[in-house]
Image 1 (tube, rainbow, N blue to C red):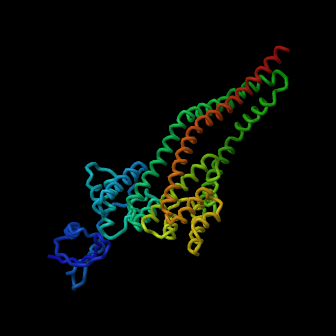
Image 2 (cartoon, one colour):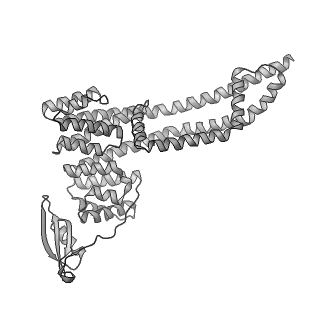
Image 3 (tube, rainbow, N blue to C red):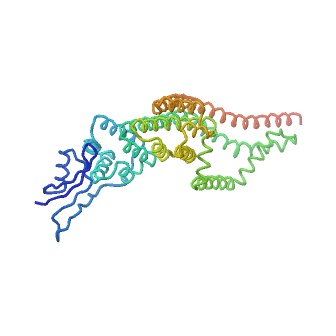
Length: 410
């Protein structure tokens, strides 16, 4: 019977080595599971010419795509299982044994195969499912290092649910305005391509001076009829050029900073960052991770390059021996209340608690801003479309009245 040499990690985090006699690789894994050992490396001792045979990694499905809803469900289930006291391998095994055939089952199985070979969960996620993204994987890596993976997963699930709810609310709020927009564009197209050329002949017969607004409308109609191809080409060039710009390093950095200054939307993005930054850093510090290491991990988990630069500046300042609050104060992007709460936490020696409180505060403010945003979108879109259609209709009707009065005078 083959003899396998293994290296594993026990429940206390210590590495252990040993030998097992087993019929196959899968039996080695079962025996290690019984002993609550997490395998890192397994070699077959009795190979050809007396050499050890490294057991090859089992073929596992890669590049599995998940929707946002599936990622939320996966995150919630995994955090619940880890909170219940299971280790990563047994937790993934429970998810893998689900009855229904789904992408979640495949992802759990593929992740478990990588983890059993000694890979970290965050590294396995990068290989198995690109849908998780760098931000998600960096946060999972931070949770693994700090020992707070269940808490970080639960917070990430709440964050994803918030973003998903925001998208659903915006979609619901835009459904009716979108219908108004489509109808309005259709009316404008009919006005500009059919009605305006028709009434232009009437205006010319009257010999009366056409009102300024109607004259501008006629000129715009002629321009659209003769140069529609130029308008379309300009729109395409602008879109392509903008896309290429934000895919460069400098352009992406500019766009990330510009987003934060947009009306209404910028406030939501800032509030989301303050809440996530404070709560994530609080969780890392509370679980024993040094502040400097926590800042570096939070920077890696931030998708906005403008915020990454600012966090790096604070990290460098703290690394030189400066205080965290003073490092934030040197920047202009953090509000005074945020800095004051951090300073209080440093003075009392409980920075994690102070960060958690400020994170909760900005989380509440974020929910209010989201509600205001969804409530504001619908009337704004309706007002803009009604204004455009109203101006065009007024220009046509006003011109027709002037033309009719000119004919009657004649």
